[in-house]
Image (cartoon, rainbow, N blue to C red):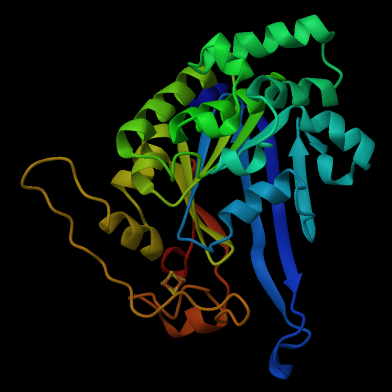
Length: 326
Ligand code: SF4
């Protein structure tokens, strides 16, 4: 997407989701798990922003907090410049039509006793879109757009393969014609060949529906394939953000470098030097002081143990939170 056309549709500012700890050992009483800690980014119109990081880094919680599937602890989420976290529930439900989520396992959100067509239609009914006949037409139309057949309308969830179920997930998300999709590991449970079919379908649908997307994944290769820009998360914080080509050709944060060093290179004979991080990911219940990555960082300095690094811009549309660049 050309930079000069960039216009924000979603601005996440200082988003936090903290969980109180209950029923644990006395030393952890009154402590909080900081699942998402002061995360800020902008999603532009027509753009796909990849959010990547290891399991437990807070990327899925970020997606859910934006849609208030879990209530954020603090921060702002501006949709078309309006803070949707301040909206009362009734007003927020109207906005939800414009912002839909696609989950890793759409099967778990489908009622096994309800035919697929009826499940897809639910979103139209909830938002009072169209009359009965129009809703059926819209469902048939979206089935075709996601590569399913009209007779699939009358089938039950167990009659579909994993790839078909993800197509149903996309149909449910898209039938009400949203502006924003938040996709949480949408291809993680699929075989590689089916993954690429779904990713290609997603790209076609994004163009057709003029969607802006937040694509959450632990898989760097998948994120590279689908995203215009990428944000890298670690222990609830955003460490680096850049255009996809920049991030993959010139990563600057030590954590991003280590993640990318594990991604195979397609060219024969070319190999990256693998950066193996020491230790395990620390517990979010007792996260390290200063830079949250300092216990595993090969470049950690004294200042890193004491001072939280600010996010700084090192190039146009390339930010990093690391003392090496201050
Ligand atoms: Fe490593 Fe320090 Fe940079 Fe954190 S701030 S990533 S510990 S060099």
